[in-house]
Amino acid sequence: MGRLNAPRGLPRRGVLLLVLAAAIPWLHWSAGAAAGVGAEVTLGPTASDSDFLYVQPADGISTVLLRDALEQLGFEVDPDQRLEGARVRVGTADARSLAARLAGTHLARSVEGDAVVRATQLAGDVSTPPNDALYGLQQDYLAAIGAPAAWAREHGGSGEGVLIAVVDTGIDYNHNDLIPRLAINFNDEFFDGRDNDRSGCPDDIVGCNFVSLSTADPSCGYTAAPPNWRTLDDEGHGTFVAGVAAATGDNEVGITGVAPRASLLPVKVLDCTATGRISDAAAGIRYAADMHADVINISFGTPNDSPALREAI
Image 1: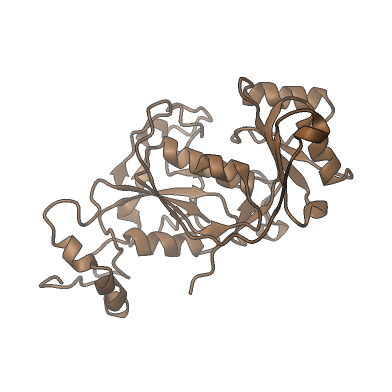
Image 2: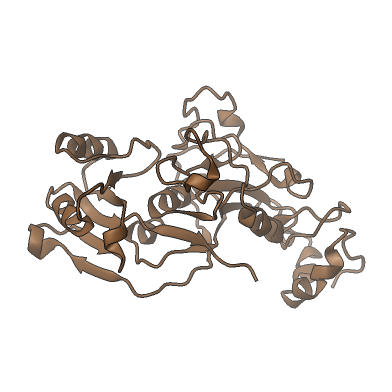
């Protein structure tokens, strides 16, 4: 396991983003003319079905001030403290009129439907190949991208010293191929509910869970908000992605990852149905960048253009 030491507040390093997502048409307009402000309003073609809107604060307004002000104005604000901004419940209101009202408060720089993000559908020259049991089944694609030749390089070819954030359904951190690759945050190991390392996510000893009880699919059976530290994969997609990226090599188990000595940072933003919300996904991407991930893998998509996701990326 790798040691993670990246407190919030330090400059972000350059990040390689791997985005596997497909966009489809969206409905997008500026509320400035109607509301007299410059807030960007983005709602998808099924805006009438939106159950939450995601509001990002205007310049000079903190998240705390935004939430307090919206509550005083009578909006129902989700209590999730990990979000940058506020998630507002639509309730019986019309999503479009509510978005215009939010834009008209002068508190927001953007208002958007907190649309669903969905995991992308998933469809190895060295003298001695890895001894992993299933390596033979993957040898062709690893060879096609030149992975064995990269591994043979003296420096850097195996991913050693590289932190890969997998923003997905979590990672099975009990898997023998992945246990050695997990980045452990010893700066926040006390499980005391405090953000000891100022990462923005208390108790994030093995990454952070951003799935919200209020938006998770009921079929997942969550009866309370999942603890931040519980990034265990309950769907499988994130574990698959993590294995392809960095499964431990030469351990006679499973497969070999493309970067078999890289470290993995689980960032859970999708629930047991491999779906999540824009607000949680944006928070997860920001967290990964703040933890100084060298690579952020994003294998999900949404039908909406999203100001929050654009800014996070």
